[in-house]
Image 1: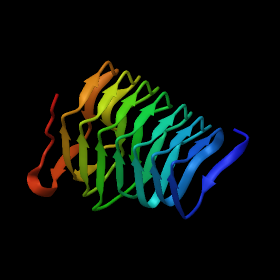
Image 2: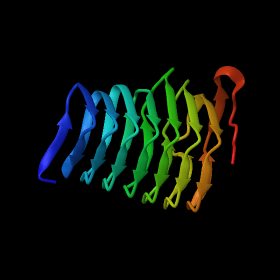
Image 3: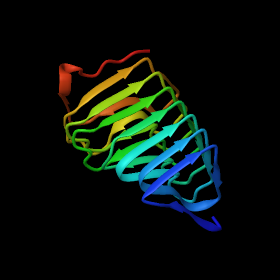
Image 4: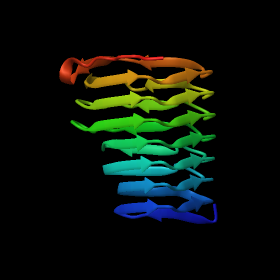
Length: 183
């Protein structure tokens, strides 16, 4: 908490360790690969309006939400997201964008594993994740209004969370690929 963090219009980190900051790594477009982001006083990694890519990284011990896409799409693939305020969250519009959350371990967070907040006309793919031991639900839509949104939820291992899936006011959209659940 002795320094602010990294804030840039476009931020790209590869093989980096970022720790002990107030607000994490933020920008319009953010890409974090093979890195560690930990011990943030707030969020870990956040993109506002551009795009978010987080691959093969470890995001841990952040007081707030460790991975946030606001008004943009995201690819969150092969990460360990553990011991944070919550897990992966999308907020704001994101009209017509894709959200891919695949092959992650989302564990031991103090709130929900994956939070979907009001994505209109978007495509979600939540596949092959381990979502376990979170104090909230594994997957939730907090604000409803997910009209014309397509969700594929398949092959996930969901164990020991406070609850499993709650998609309040969800309406199917693109491609008739409604919710498909796996394990």
